[in-house]
Amino acid sequence: MYSLTGVIQHYAWGGRDFLPELLEVPNISDRPFAEYWLGVHPGGPARVSLDHGAHTGLPDLIRSDARRYLGDKTFEGFGAWPFLLKLLDVKGMLSIQVHPTLEEARKGFAAENAAGIPMDAPHRNYKDPNHKPEVMVALSDFWLLHGFNPSIREVLEKVPELSILLSVLDVNGLEGLYRHVMEMPPDEVDRMLGPLGERILPEYRAGRLDKSGSDFWAARVLDEAGGELRGMDRGIFSIYFFNVVQLKPGQAVFQGAGVPHAYLEGLNVELMSNSDNVLRAGLTPKHIDIPELMRHTLFEPVDPVVMEGDAVVGQPSSLRRYPCPVPDFTIDRLELPNGSTFKYISAGPEIWIVISGMVRWSGLRSLETVKGQAVYVVPGEEVTLSAELGALLFRAFVP
Image (cartoon, rainbow, N blue to C red):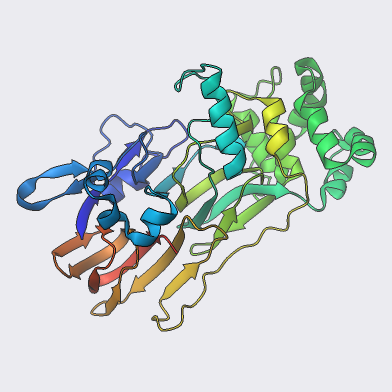
């Protein structure tokens, strides 16, 4: 077992309190603390604490003996570290996005390389040859957009400014509807969304809109843009087309390839494949490639599956597992009451993050962790966790 230190990402949409308090990092300059990364991604590789005060990068440690530090199954199945664990503080809305399948990510990455597109080019779509399925577990009330709303027709009927799109939906289906608004000229976007903004923005500013409705989030986009009703973000259409989902702490959602989604507000633990491949559809100043986005979007109604966490046979009832339909990762949530212990043998590489409490770790090495601290457990390690204070932890691992 090794203490692990991740990397903070200061994206503009991040909050300013949660991560600094959790990690005990002062935020004197009042910067946004958006994400905390724990993994080997080149955009923010974690560092490992060795003996006698020495440190090394987690990627360097793995390269020194990949089979030992990944375990046989992960080494033979992936040949590399397969997942990235994050903590997120979503204060401002993230971009509406879609992730490619593994096959399409490999094709897209190779094609952009062959075209000579630099890795850091702002118009590059594929930063690596990997897919990016992801699961998130809420740490607070959390709001997100997830998949096309099965009741999209009823939504369009209720929103007078958008009811003109009903004929497009009837004739061309979901894909035709989405293509229509994504390819709509900017002045036409303003003509359609301008009256919508004029109606909902005063309601939002007066506190009369509920977060469960699309009007609230659409109005927030406009409010954060200063109420400007020209050059409007076409991502507002997606807010009405997709499901608005609320999660309570401990609830989770998995988001696979092709499912359009966007985080709106809240705190979460997020686990994904080790990738940064994102195709964006709006609510962002970053590159949007409409043809590529359309090629990878799943144009099917989605009934969001909210996971509560499954009990695991032979494990304490305080451990809940969120199974994901990919071989790359799984995540557990573990509550340890004061004075309790949890014993197991690690089957593959694991990263634990402590959200609250104090935990002592016993094995070939011994550690003591408090909130905000992380631990990398080597495959085949016999581990005992002892809670000195009631603790909440998450474990990311290869299933």
